[in-house]
Amino acid sequence: MTDNVGTDPQYDEFADEFLDHARDGFYNAYVDRPACLDLLGDVDGRTVLDAACGPGLYAEELVARGARVLGLDQSPRMIELCHRRVPSGDFRVHELAEPLHWLPDASVDLILFALAMEYVDDRPAMLREFRRVLRPGGALVLSRLHPTGDWLRHGGSYFDVRVVEEVWSQGWRVRYWLAPLERTCDELADAGFLIERLREPRPRPDAAAVDPRRYERLSREPTGFLAIRAVPRPGD
Image (cartoon, rainbow, N blue to C red):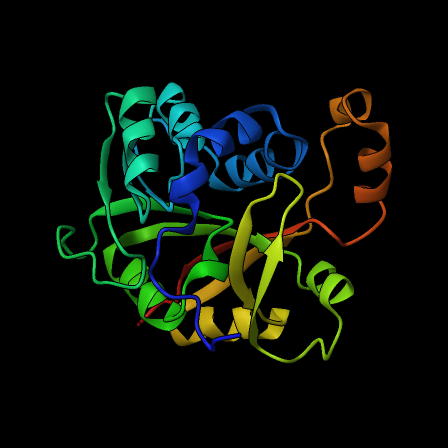
C-alpha cells in the first residue's frame, strides 16, 4: 500500500452508479445529507462552495433553499452530472489540495465538504484555502467517516494515520486515509478554524421503515459518520 491516495479521480469510473446509489441510499439520504444541511443552516441568499460536490445532490438542495452554489470535484464525470442536475450552479473540475485560484479572499459565505476529507493527501493546504476564501462570519461544514467505525473495520492502532484500500458492497474499490478524530481537530486548528459543533449523526426517524436493521445499528453504534461545523478563528 502506498503512503498517499493520489490525485486520480477514483469516483469517475462509477460516477453514474454512485448517483443512483446516493440519491436515495440509506447512508447518504438518511444520515449524512440531513446532518450536513442542518449544520449549514439558512442558506437563502448566501454563496456556498460545495467542495467535492459529487453528482450534485447537495447542490440541488442548496439551490432549492435559495443559495448560489459554486462546486468543484476531481471527477470530470461528476461535474458533468452536476451541470445536468443544477444548471444554475458554477461547477468545475479541480484537484482538492490545489489552490482555489479562481476565488478571491473572503468570497464565499459557507463551504460544504461532505465525505471527501479522506481522499485528500494534503489536507492542511486544502483547509488553509478554505479558510482564505471564507468571509468573516462564515463557516465550514464537513463530514467524514467515523474514525471509530474505520478502526473497527480495519483493526490495527486507532491512532495510526495511514492509507487503506477497501472494496465496497457495490464492488467499488476505493483508497482513502484513516485518521483519529484528534488529527482532524488538529488540522482544522492549524488552518485557523474553531470547531463550533461536532455531531455523530444518527439516521432520520423515517429511515426505520427503509432499512430497520441499519437504522437500529446506526442508532446505537459509532460506525457511520462525523459532521463538524467550524468557523474562522478570530484574528487569524
